[in-house]
Length: 444
Ligand code: NDP
Image (cartoon, rainbow, N blue to C red; front, side, top):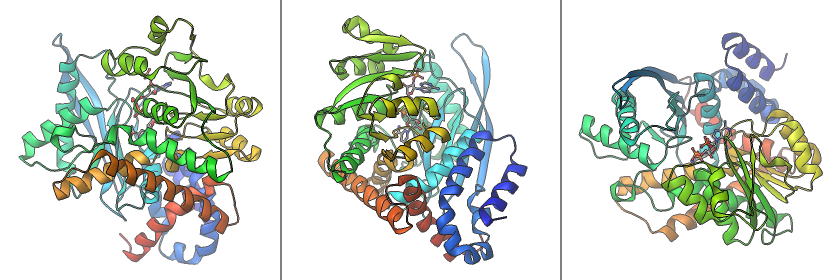
């Protein structure tokens, strides 16, 4: 049995009920095979893979809170502190009813490699709760965030673990959690990123993941001798990542024709009017179908995802496993030649196989959506310096980081004999730095 298979079999035995985590590890380990083959003796001696797949620590806790009617609720809160070899744990908090330890471990594992790819000194972590902010009042969300932080604060700190937002955790939630952290600890420090501008947030952080996604797409497309201008783009989701990906794609001359939420998708062949989407999602916190009230010529398809719409470029920006093998086949058949993931692991294993087999440009999430965490790390730097950089400065650094990620991923793939396979490239490029640091630091 190969070293990779041995480690995976043992993990499967120990964590049989963690399907999402096992799936993520399997896919990552498979693509690390070339670097493991080249270093097997060294890795075995250092128990490297066995350590790489187990989080350094997982904290779970109950989160009691009271709703506006006075009814008490208990949710489950988590923080997975996965790997601190190259920096303090860093990764978002997700509030969604689907949150489990397995999902957070899968996201944490992805985060280790993503953070490494940014070239910045940040380790991997992820956390959240099975709390659903939809339909909750501001006061309920505030009470939940305060209760969540009343437990979490014990385990985080500006040089220990610096959480950020993710699904269901935006500026409002980060602000409530920051307020509670400060109140309990009496520290005014950069313990969370994605903060408001008036209390330590970075310009361009809200835009960073979406903009970064388009910067890497632009680089990838130009390297392939094509251009973004004039291309038709299909995007899923309508949250933070989807909105700012739409904004930057439109600025660069592409036409975005779809957005979605968990109820369905909108198709506007004339190009999505982002001002309307922002009003629905950021101001009213409404549903994407409300777009038709302002643009009756658009179409709304309930209960479906937009992968049947003809496009050049597809950008899944909602959630994990939102494209299956059949849908991937449909995209390719309709002429799609580029897929880049704004969301974390939105393509399932069959979809990834289909993209790789068709040899289209395919950039996995850990590279394509790394702009968010990169600017979060820049927020940490600004907090340490007690300085605020201009939008242009942060945006310029973001662009440079995304271009560097593309080059690193593409060169690493070629160096290991997998030219054009950015899955292998991203996983190995991220892993190289982390594994070197883990070996150098000894058996910890
Ligand atoms: P938001 O909460 O702002 O938006 C999420 C969007 O995806 C919403 O439109 C939501 O619809 C939709 N969605 C969520 N779950 C599902 C589901 N099960 N089925 C269909 N649609 C769904 O989150 P973000 O935009 O921040 O995050 C989107 C993705 O990007 C996630 O995978 C996240 O991990 C990833 N990501 C985010 C980063 C960031 O900086 N924010 C950084 C890197 C990755 P609805 O409102 O109906 O739930």
